[in-house]
Image 1 (cartoon, rainbow, N blue to C red):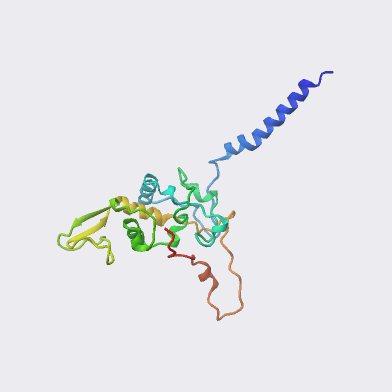
Image 2: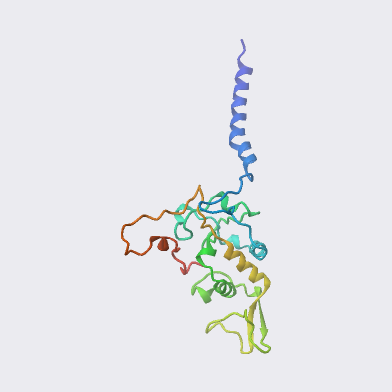
Length: 228
């Protein structure tokens, strides 16, 4: 009896089933993960970006920020860039997902929690060396407008420190693109406790005079670290 065709069919089926299990089925499953609620929360996570933050996401993409910044906190990056590492659920509302592959600047997945001050972000965009002395990040002055002060100074004009001022009688104000980009940066938070990536637990203590450990655990480290 010739077992050649049977042997060939068995090998073919083995490769076909392996391909289906490791390539085809995972591809079919991509993009079908459902939103879920974090621990001790009522709203689905992640929450959608506001209209202004969504516009800022497009500015972030257009300016190529993902070329120098990642948005993926790895286990070894905790707690420097976030209280937990990021998982697939963090990106369910993003299209496209801007992971980034090169970390010339710090990871931004949780920058909204680490640096919530909009004024800091605006100064950093205008001239990164205002906020971080030896920053290698390029200046984005074209996202701002220098204009002559007419009457009173604008409420949203940048408070430029000594050494970075413009000529007397002029002010620098952010454009809509700068404001929206900052709104997007502030919306980047990966601090919800998820099933796949829970927040670190706070050890219980019997010392009633000790400072609450939760306050310390909730404070990200290296907030003002000169990394950009």
